[in-house]
Image 1 (cartoon, helix red, strand yellow):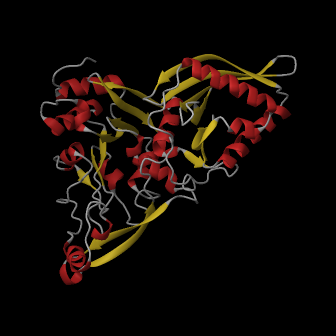
Image 2 (cartoon, rainbow, N blue to C red; image 1 turned 90 degrees about the vertical axis):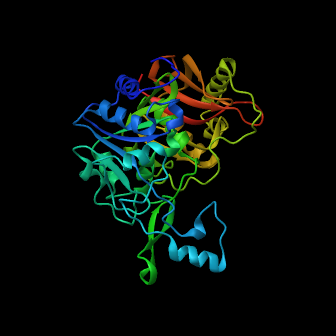
Length: 407
């Protein structure tokens, strides 16, 4: 894959196939046209490339959300009141699957208009699909919990659909909303949906999972990538493509409560700190894991917790994603692990085979091999673990995401 002054549909299709887009599969795509550079034919060329990569037996799926089909009082870019607000409420067009545009970008809008594309009936979070399983994906789609059970996102998960993030991050991965919707302590909101016109106008309220607003999904995505459950790479020489399967199957929960809530994890940023902090380097990562070994040797969860930022996430080897909202959560999580290790005869730990990958101005992804040792130095347990390390106010790195791997 090479960088060129322009991109053709054939170039994109070839790169997408090489990247691993499953021929004959079901593919959910979130995308950014600008991330691909100068595309001859624009958004329609990208749609053609995706269809060519999937082949005639594949089903292409994209979000066709229309958040403007809602109460104008809740629009972030408008400030209406009094008679003006009531007039706007009376005239907001009701949803029409054939004519209501999507605001998800130029590629989804081109796909919505594509001959043969089927669009679902949800007024705010509809889905478009084209291919043999299109109807099966998009309908039914109830108003309540539009991203939850019974929705297209549940069916995509059941189909083991692949997720392609083309120039966008995991903050755009709607399948994570589905994963969150299944747990009892999920974040929630109420959708306000207009129905009917003129004298028949009425407003329908529908419960749904809450917005993430870049709070937790980017860190969950980092842990997902670190666990090897998705790949990242380039399309047409440009970074930012991610391809994976099964994010809707993630079981998300706080420590000690099994598959419970991502929803209880608060609203603060996953990567707090000053913008002028210096990024950690290899030496800083080595020092971090040396401190980890020292803290581990005390078998005190509070000392291990000092090495982690909150809120954060930990992806266990069994696939459970644990939300660590507070320092107390981190202490409990690691104290439980330390107690188990001690019962199993572990007395020490050591790290080896450190590798690091820079991730922006303040972070790096560090992977190490851990050995847990008995009293006589015998290796009891051996595995690989990844950490997203970030520098904060004191420029000393802390981890805000970790993922366990098989050795």
